[in-house]
Amino acid sequence: MENCIFCKIVQGEINANFVYRDGEIVVFRDIKPKAKHHILVVPVEHVESLLDLQDKHFSLLTKMIKVIQQLVKEHKLDSAYKLMVNGGKYQEVPHLHLHLLAD
Ligand code: 5GP
Ligand code: ZN
Image (cartoon, rainbow, N blue to C red; front, side, top):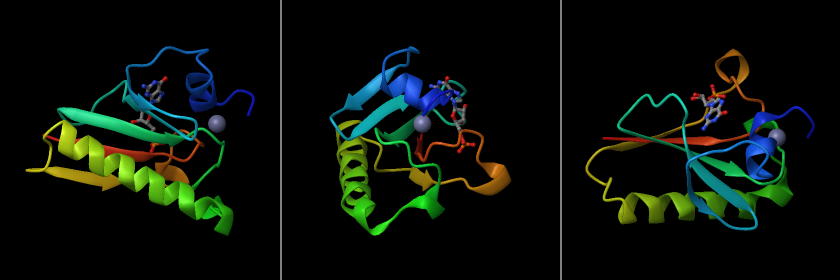
């Protein structure tokens, strides 16, 4: 999607501090962290919001959760972490992403 900042990050047009990536999911650190660890889990496909997810996306969502499980374990964040999805006026970037926040 043109002019989408997360599509530009996915495509390597804008730099980010990448934590993980595969063909379907890209994970990088938030530019303005609101916790010691503030990680964004982003699908490669431009899906605008949670409400735009269709049946065909649900295996992708499961994969995002699995990636988060791995991140929490590998980065030893299991003592204090939370997941967040913003929508409507709370969503600044209109490309679906899960926030992983941890101490
Ligand atoms: P939202 O409100 O859409 O759920 O959150 C968007 C998040 O993306 C914010 O926490 C914001 O700091 C982060 N963000 C916005 N632009 C960039 C960017 O260019 N690079 C990175 N790494 N994070 C960004
Ligand atoms: Zn996008």
